[in-house]
Length: 206
Image 1 (cartoon, one colour):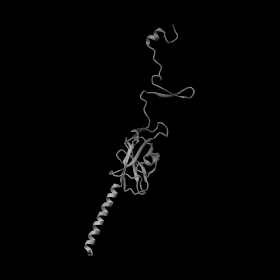
Image 2: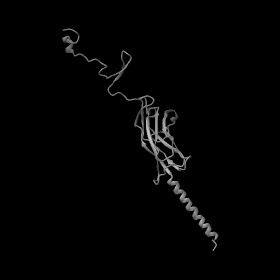
Image 3: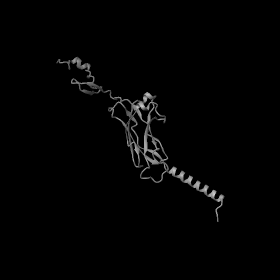
Image 4: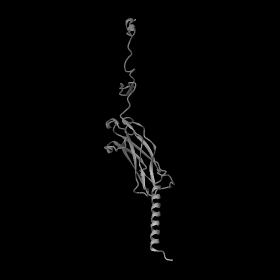
């Protein structure tokens, strides 16, 4: 018995709906998010430890909705760290003060890969109205079959110049040009008591 045109139309419509549902399900299952495994130190002293002094953060990718994790991505996902304020707004002069020292690897091909990011921030928070900083990790999915990756931020970092010495210690140069640290107690000789002065002690008289 031949199938009527109306029945064929209904069948094609049903198949199209099933394909749309399957495609939407596949797209949802292929959504990922950034997971921050290690946050940078909450306070960074930019003028201590030399130019190699840096902060570190470690991230990896996770499925947004759970489900089976493939052994490998179809393509590459490129990691892009972005400097932001703690309120999420991007720093306007990030290209000048955000020093990305290491990003390894720069792209991931497997969900189990961890990405290590080492960086410096070359301006103190005080110069930015006291605002702390965060690093947001974006992921470019255009070279892969992943539909999207939700970004994530590190915890906030307060950038200072250097530690203040709590005991008033200073730095002096020795006679041979060496650098010596002295405390406030060592920098001033002890005062003689009035009684010692009257008795002539401490000045060579007996």
